[in-house]
Amino acid sequence: MMKKIEAIIRPENLEQLKEALLKANIPGMTINQIYGCGNQYGYTEHVRANEIIVNTLPKVEVKLIIPDERLDEMIKLIISVTQSGEFGDGKIFVYDVVDCIRIRTAEHGDKAL
Image (cartoon, helix red, strand yellow):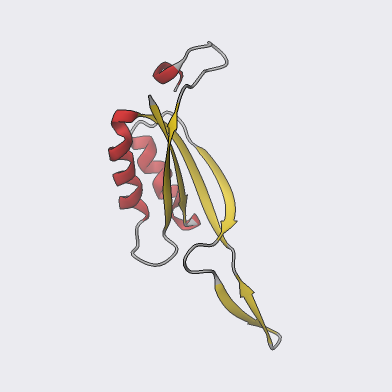
């Protein structure tokens, strides 16, 4: 079995996380620029005497598929690189992955990663 990790992080942490994942021999990742809000619900700005509530903030979503045995290692790595202790550090979601197939070779499972 494999796991899918979706980490939603601050954009300024992306390069450092990519470097750490490459050093940890992660075979690949998918990165998306996203907007969202969590417990902080954004912030208030004043523009031309008008109050504007900005309730979605720019974030980056990093997706990885890894073997089960590397799950704890990867979660610790993501936290160690991205944690500041402030609101907005992000979230990590973990899902079970039933299979992975490499289209080029039709390999399945861990071999396809």
